[in-house]
Image (cartoon, rainbow, N blue to C red; front, side, top):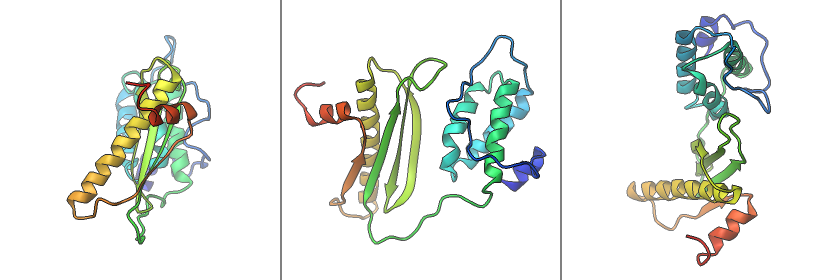
Length: 199
């Protein structure tokens, strides 16, 4: 990461507190100032690789990667902010600690009309095995209502937990492992607990 900062000349920059501005409004404009597309794509590619051990930048990377075909000065500034954020913690990353359990836990959330570009829902989840973060994902979802988007987000997180459980069973761990799915939407929880009134 320090090599990446020195490559773009940000080794002595002032660190940022967050990887992306809260309530950002990054979109494409017809009169935007274009930037070097090759440099932008190379930096985004390196940050995508880095996000495998730094899930705290995954959302910001997903935002800036949507403009790789036509980056502007505004998009490049958002990319520079991610690098400035990484400057504040160059040696941090995922730590896997040994615990006395292999409990599976999943956390899910859906952002109502989270993408200002196409007004789609943003669904995201992350899962823990034995107290260690192992998978995470965010994805745009098309749905008729917020309840449907929330339910579909819950479904994706649950499928991830089932996949992890099956994987652990294949490598020799028993099928009696507890799985917890944490969610905060009452409508989606009610739908999931009532198998009669939904498809």
